[in-house]
Amino acid sequence: MGYYEKWSEFVEKYQKLCMENDTISDELFKEFGVNRGLRDINGNGVLTGLTNISKIDSFQVVDGKKIPCEGALWYRGYNVIDLVNSISEDAFGFEKTAYLLLFGELPTKEEEAEFADLVAAGRELPTNFTRDVIMKASNKDIMNSMTRSILTLASYDDHMASNEVANVIRQCLNLISVFPMLAVYGYHAYNHYERDESMYIHRPNPELSTAENLLMMLRPDKNYTFLEAKVLDVALMLHMEHGGGNNSTFTTRVVTSSGSDTYSAIAAAMSSLKGPKHGGANIKVMEMMSDIREHVQDYTDKEEVGSYLSKILDGEAFDQKGLIYGMGHAVYSLSDPRERVFKSFVEKLSVEKNRERDMALYNNIEMLAPELIARKRKIYKGVSPNVDFYSGFVYEMLGIPVELYTPIFAIARIVGWSAHRIEEIIGMNKIIRPSYKSVMIEKSM
Image (cartoon, rainbow, N blue to C red; front, side, top):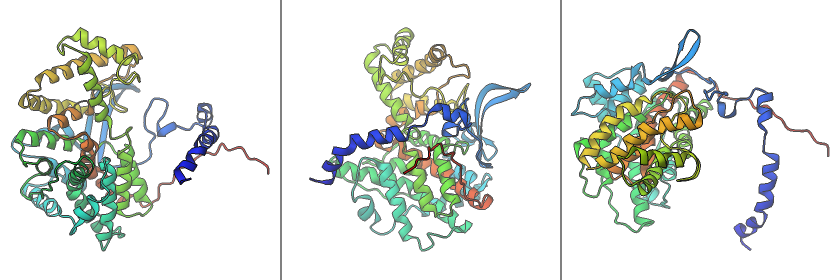
């Protein structure tokens, strides 16, 4: 009898033991004043650190009371909406925004060009790395493929373990440079070996931006329109960083605080981001939208759309969980600033792709869902669409496969992780060691 067959005989017994001995009641959390998931009773994150990298606004304090306000996201003191709008219509902003987050200041034109050249020069993998690492043991989970590649890259770094600031900056910049290659090549390997499709590996072009290279390397013919690259560039800018309190960024800081190396810290962040509660929200939105399209005939009929949304909320449709995905956010109340600035670009792309009918459906859901949720769930802080409501739609219009949705999130968020790793090394210098209250009952032999 093999290991797995033998193990399956005992799984029910062992699972029962775990359920009995590892369940902790809500009453004990209340008794000892412990916040589940580091969130208080109102869902606000417990303060665990200080940062100068980014900030989120979702409430204003008026006469001592917290009042919901339009959401705002700040990168190094700059409003993210202003940052996006500051990029000229014929330019891309990923490199400029990455410079800002990493170094704390907006670059001059010369500094931006120098930084872009540095990122472009870093888009090079070790000899035979694509063949021997990325193509080996390919699988559908591109996040796992990327994480394996990240840890393997450590073997090629003679200064892997050094946490000198200059060395960490070099390592972070190199990972920012190669992340698009790790993601796209990982997908191509899976597409070839697991789905029996054609294989093609396009080398990045140093003259192109990060967004342009992503589309060029992904597509068989290397072709893309300027608007396609522009919208993807904006998506990357908006996903780079988010207040420092998210799960994967906290993971980066926890691992960094132990003195571990850059590759291990970023690999840990990748493992956090791939969790469906963190990085896969737009995939769930796309699944829901596909279901809505199957059951709603007239996308412009608000009554028909609203009726089906009510069924979803009542747990009678889609996945029976009673959630309209892409609506609401753990922090924002009245609005998600990323969604507000992103939507205009989504609308332009929908016209280019002849998807105005689908855009009309999204607009109706955006208008109807908050009102339905507020009424049925009695939510008073405000419900609004978040950036994930539209990001999956954009990726679909760009022909990006679902397997790359979360990896694209990582391609953007590696910048934020890197900024927080550098800040942790420079400013904290103390291991993050939380405390757990034991509620174990002592027993006699």
